[in-house]
Image (cartoon, rainbow, N blue to C red):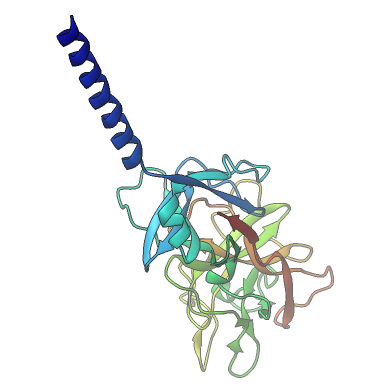
Amino acid sequence: MKKILLTIAVVSTLTFAACNDDDDNTPKTSNLSLSVSGLENLGADYVYEGWIIVGGSPVSTGTFNVNDSGELSRSSFVVDSDMLSAASTFVLTIEPTNDPDPAPSSTKILAGDFSGNSASINSNIVGDFSSSWGKFILATPTDGENTNERSGVWFLEPGMPPQVGLGLPELDEGWKYEGWAVINGVPVTTGKFTKLAATDEFDGFSGPMDLPAPNGADGFFPGEDFLVNAPDGVTFPTDLRGSTIVITVEPNPDNSPAPFTFKPLAKKVADDAQDHVAIDLGTGPSVAITGTVSR
């Protein structure tokens, strides 16, 4: 009987010691909290993903979605304590929902350095649009002169020759500019572009003439004639007076055919606006996003 009791005692001691060893080896975790407003619903194909930068390397803090009201699907994330305490920077990216690449994408939307236990994050990593400016004219060069001249928009400064009409920061990989005309409440693209004095990536609404865009000493310019292939809810040709002209910053690849959150420049065209006359763009409704991360 004594031998049996002794055996039980030894086994119990070893088991207790093993449990203690397991507890000592269990990774310690902490919560990272994210507070931000102004993010939009990315749809089913994309998600937001947070990253902490530790020793120059990115470590994922997890993904989340945003609903149509701007509410985050979650704002608290469990992260390895040692990693979190050593993190220098927080970065938020846009990623494919089914992402085969474990590294961050090029589409970085928010970032900020930690100071103590918090980091103020902002969208300056996309660009500082606070001093952006722009001009455009109403014209339709792809169907000849003096024809439907208020049914096209071109981002340029008129002259002999025309000059660049947009003052915008150069975008990093992962982002592109896109022009829009909001016609009777329907946003209609003028095309995506990365260079301010170059043709954009779209001419699906322009006319048949072999004149893709007005050109000047600095090259061609972004813009579009609205003459053919009108989308649902819009009739071409149109009259852009009373419509709103907008420049957005879009993710690349793009999560949606609709305008994205960032709208640094916008202008409602006056009812008495003249064609071929420069119209100034004003500050748009959404220029920057800010937030806070706590650890």
